[in-house]
Length: 544
Image (cartoon, rainbow, N blue to C red):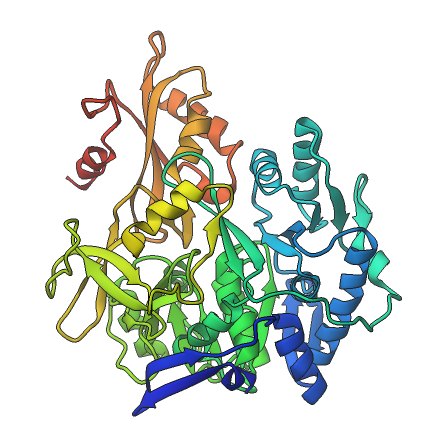
């Protein structure tokens, strides 16, 4: 297992107690992991891919290495090189994996995004990142939305799609065929930017989170000690490639562990299909947000004899789901916690009992502390903020290196030399963490992080809306659902019909995961002296 070349893990009775990383200054995942495995064991399976049309591809590390070189040559031949930023919206298409390696290989910065975004969303991301190119799926509305975005904003960018010709786009699949499969090493540094993920903020537009080339190494703990990825195994994380969870569970840590990754390309979630894929391909470890497990339990779980480990993260997991899944499968659900800005911060790790409802214990990678607002360490059972202290004055690997174009915000989350997650939790006498919510207004719905400001920006453009506020409310399947509260303009009656009109207006302009599920009217909002709407009071009213 190649990951052992880059870290020294200290275990006690199977439990990870400490881990030290060592890597060259020019560490690059493409050359030092993918190419190395391809050289030593070229036929070792890297990716097992299928879709709902019963198409299938099984790619070895040798395949991925060669494909990524051909892809890299297409990019280099078209002026894409070190430091250039490239938007990637490839759903769960198998091309994502060699492309991710190709971009890493040439030192370009990959910006994975979901295909659910609207033209407005794409325009913001392209403009904010100054992306030089975009490589996108030919399916659905993605290509059309990106074309609308760049035409409306006059954004200069090279556009590729895959497999199919689309007006205004070049066909990447055609261009990579026949390219040479040899390419010398291109010099990069471990500290160079490698990835940018856009994540929702409390207010305003999404934040661009920058990770460097050490980020894949930090996911060794994620894959090996939390997700149960094994050498020669097959790991299946249910995530679309546009989200950071794909980096957590669909490529880096798993390949470092010697595990292949399972990719199932689908549009609409069907629990039965997931179970069928797990059984057909003999998946050994599985990770999904609590929403998926809720559906599995609700619809009934078939036997999954190959499955040896199951993990979950992203939102609160109901204890009943934990127990019913264990009764049906004999497997405990191993919860975990982290952010787009980090790798795994805490988890029910290998070698410790999985505790129902707990996020687990802090990862040995990080010096995690629960801090009270006055800057003191919280007592046992006391609520505080999850923070990470630097080790020997240095930022640990796996924590992001900056917010795109926003040094002020980066300094804010790293104030006093401590990383502030904005999440609250308590720690019990056994060292387990118990999540207690966000200190800000981020909504977590179905495993997605949603910034209320993104929805409010659309709501306020409806002619009937004078003021508005968006909050998350409890939802049995999603964890939280998006609710809009609207103060209508004079002359508009707060009727059921108007509510539906406003919802339809907004949802037609929002990515599906941000859709408003409930809407109510108010005659006025509770506010601070400075006029800011008190969302805490709105949430309290929902819980009464």
